[in-house]
Image (spheres, one colour):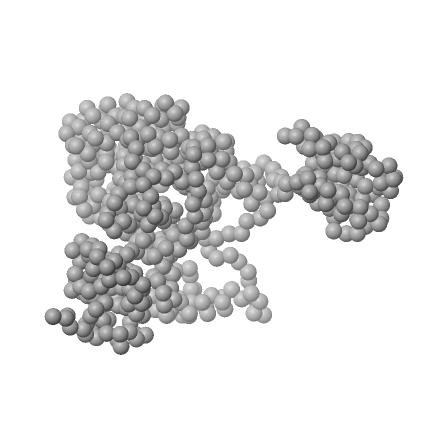
Length: 582
């Protein structure tokens, strides 16, 4: 017997459920999607149910035989409709609140950078346009909040740092991939814990529900699952986006680069994890930023510690997120959040406070195992033995002195399952400059069969590194060279532009980085001044007498020493001098 078509109210509820999902069964459609689609009349796919219409069209690209995946967590169509009605109600309430907030700001003349979306976004844009126009209606140009332009000197510094980091990644055998800047929204949601509120959602354009990527780790896990990869060592350098409160002084932006290195595959415990710490140490040492320490901990130890202290299991992740703030806030503020906002018993918070003050080296493992309550907990004892092996491998890799076993380290992201680490500069105030850990369950969240691929990785906080390096360069008044020009072709008299072009062609053909003035008859002093201002190491000077004798003058710009070189030997001599300069 064929199931009856869904009613108008049920169709609205299903549309509400699909407002934040591509399919009922997750990232891929399944059996429930096929059953629901059979109950949706094509005539009901109007503009009033845009999410339902999108979902209906997407399902047409799947064969009935492919719609076999079971619903997640026992989801039924009835439960989806109930959740959809609640989500639609919450969306309506949220939109009404945003409209009220926007109206209040417009009336007060202060439309700040708050989040205004949907129908209210048009009004915000109109207000922002009028507010950014100066006297006479002239547009005041600026970058969006949390973004920035980069000057040539800044980009030159960035290119050199990126090259150094890539060289380190390649030294450890990594290959690179790239993933889209936006993902299906459900790929990202539910992976970051409380930080999920920082995800940038994109307006539905009648297609898929999308969000800008929050980091490079979750897209990498999706890539591994989608391509059925069992092992890979990869690096990726790309921009990510977070709806955070920016702080230029601390190197925190809404659009910024991440440099990720990850190892996916089943290997002996802690061997890949220790190599990730070695990679962090190599990069930070090469950049000569000062003394740093890599704090390490283990999620299994944290979970066992919370269990011993009396934290309810359903609060492990939220309390972990609170502990993660100890590097920025004193214990009193963290405890207040646990008790007042997350409703943890004060005595439980105090027991946590006792343990999270511990830090040290391998000897801390033995100290904690002497605590009978901790030693009796399976998670704690297993995690401590794993940490003992990890610290031993770090010592073998020559970075044992850089590592501190720190029970206050938590890292707030939900997907971590094992060892976690975070690098900080000693005496610095920019926060962590690298972080990562093991996330064995993330790939399985995207695989239809739940196939798990163990993963561990690290992300370099490149924007914070740049903030430190740029501040130091400004303080020291260091001049950063922004081009790689090796030789500048000059003329000493008028009418020699054709000869300059011929010589430039010879140099370019020989893969020499060269340039000239774009004026036909530039003054020699201006040409030489250009070389000094831009750090060009050599200048080749052409003159009438030199042309008649088949020679050129090769000038070392820094010392102003000049030598005559046969024109057909210029490339060879120039390469030798450049090599001597290093």
